Image 1 (cartoon, helix red, strand yellow):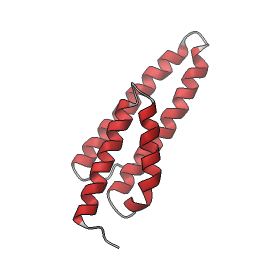
Image 2: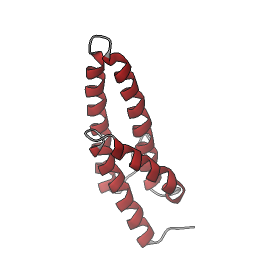
Image 3: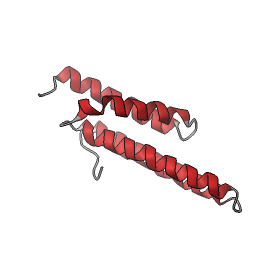
Image 4: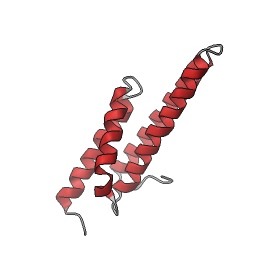
Length: 113
C-alpha cells in the first residue's frame, strides 16, 4: 500500500529526529537508546520507502557504535587505548549522522545501507 504525502512527511520528520538523537549521543549516550527504540517500533512503516534505508543505516550505526564503545571500554584499561577507540568511534558516528542527514535532505536513500 502506498503511503500518503502526510505519512511520508511524518516518516521524514521522525528520521530527522532519530539522526538528531544519534548526533547527541556522541555527548549524551542515552539519546541513542531512545533513537534505536523508535527505529525498531517504526521500522515496518518504512518498508518500500526511501526511509527504509535510513532506518537500516541508523540501526547499524547504533549497533556498531555500541560495539566500538564496548571495545573502547575494555581497552581503556590497556594504556588508555580506549580513549583513542572512543574518539575514532565518535568521529565515525558523526560522519554517519551527517551523511544520512544530507541524503535524507535530498530525499535519497543512504547507500550502502
